[in-house]
Length: 335
Ligand SMILES: NC(=O)c1ccc[n+]([C@@H]2O[C@H](COP(=O)([O-])OP(=O)(O)OC[C@H]3O[C@@H](n4cnc5c(N)ncnc54)[C@H](O)[C@@H]3O)[C@@H](O)[C@H]2O)c1
Ligand SMILES: O=P(O)(O)OC[C@H](O)CO
Image (cartoon, rainbow, N blue to C red):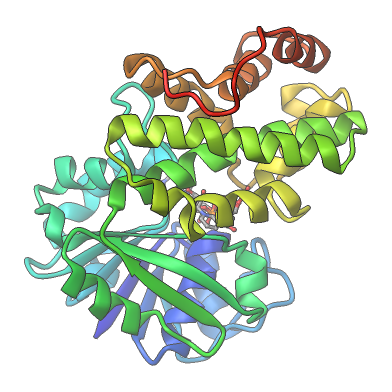
């Protein structure tokens, strides 16, 4: 097995390390030649994972063609809104039998497609060769080899099992799932809910508020998931509640950190600084998740509130008042 990890940000680099540690021959593509050089010679990626020693077996290149040639597994490790443009460049060099694995947790703006749908549309690859890797996986903790589980989802269960083995290490434990939709909805929605948790924490609210947002965030994620064909069990698992809890609770989360700065009174530009130049997917995906919910007539009040703060100039205080001012309802409802 040979893997190409396309994207040398924090998660692409951690996943490349996992693959090498799992015994999979791996090359990582970095946009900047100097980063590829640093990975090859110093075995570090100081911008994204400072202090982490990468395995010497991991090779890097700034040529997407060199990375993709002969790869059995192509791991898509760039942010959601740049995946389409990158895939257009990569497609001619992707092998006819290769598995494509999406790492990105977002919904494409405009098209409202999930990342596996973007991959299928651009590359023309059939669904049974497209997989998603998602779960409670903060990149730095995985790079530090802290134990964690994840999900590898593919409609072709046997391909998911093959990939499971390519990504299995003594610290990283993948479970298979055939519910690609549920895994992608869980991964995209949790970033938006983590922004809300960050805002609450930035304002100074404690654990009751956070638990309320996580639980009601899961409720609206399940409503959206069910409307687009996800299984509730998936959202009750690692790709749903698991990732939601990790992202909403950790100061390592870029989405939570971004929200926390907004809750403290920072502007959007100031909040961006809290992520050290790394992507906080929920900032853009709150609009596409909201649009997807509107398309399916699914109420997502927390997502609406986050969208209002990030894109409509609503203050965090007004967003909170408006959420608490909504009419009372039963805990469980579907419409
Ligand atoms: N970091 C994590 O803990 C983590 C964990 C699981 C999933 N993810 C998801 O993985 C995806 C990638 O996130 P990340 O954490 O590696 O992000 P990052 O910001 O750390 O790195 C993004 C990488 O993509 C590259 N990039 C950015 N824009 C690009 C473009 N237009 N064309 C080509 N390359 C571009 C950057 O140079 C960088 O190498 C996101 O969807 C994120 O939600 C992240
Ligand atoms: O840092 P975040 O907020 O992008 O979250 C990282 C991962 O998705 C957690 O599983």
